[in-house]
Length: 417
Image (cartoon, rainbow, N blue to C red; front, side, top):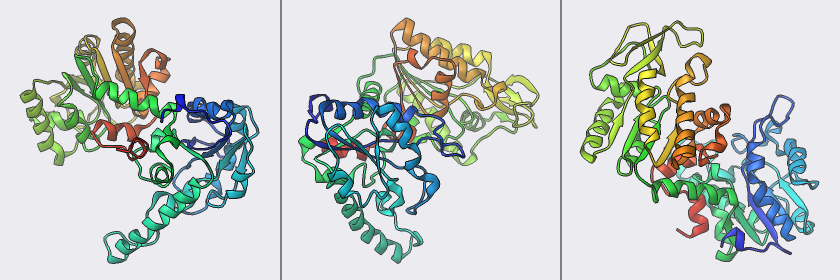
């Protein structure tokens, strides 16, 4: 069932949102992006004349009640955005009365789902790899089903609009869907947009297709890189992970970040790219620092000859010039991860330039661009370019797993895959 085709009039809808928003020490929301992202779905339920029940997690309370992670702190902010006084259920597992009393046009927010260990379905207080753990896991699976069934009992319809947790098989993101008929469960608007954006790059890409993969470690993106080698024409690898590739080829990388144990895999990627005709582009020179600090001394050095006591910290102008040509000639662009130490202002230049190239390719050359991952998203936001790329993904881990080629449980549960 598609949310656009559904009329919520007279129905109670339970919507899984991602309200895991940052709070300051006084419990005040410091960034409401995730709340705003869910509004089209939430407002559709209310505008149709439905009753709205919202459920979310916040932080990692590990199955225990933690007042600092209580969703009661965001009720005011959610009410402000929705334009209705949101009611609050202090116990998400015992909210039957509050849900039953809800009238059309009213909204209820449940307390943090992860105050219950059943939400994540992980045994608590038992050591992994022991017979006791296996037994506890089996028992927890049954408890997780019961918890999901309880949540489902509050409503007539289930909507999943929390892409950030779509890669988790949790009670509220996947298991709950089993308790609704196919015509009473659906993806929310945000989820639909995320799934469509990923399909646009993985299944419907126009060529040339370029993936820009950055970040600090090869280990965190290896599966992504391998899956992309069968799809892309150009693969740009930047950031800290690039130095493992350089060292694997005999380069001297000074004190740069690298993973020795991943060097054979890096060589395999280089060989596979060659075999598949993929243009693999690494840095040719780097802006090196003599300490991991914003105030470090800087010099531009050849990527294969970084002096001892110095580490690669940002992409050089020469590397950026190569990458600009590739990006501007592309029709599909996927960008995940910075190409330098973006958190340091003096080493953020390269990542900012990549953001500009992706925006230029999108705006001037008609490319389709998908940007995801914390620092990449921060870069397009910092330079005011978020509205100049095709799509900015809200779900880092979920997006990565989708790009790896994995099925997302939160999506599969709705689509019956």
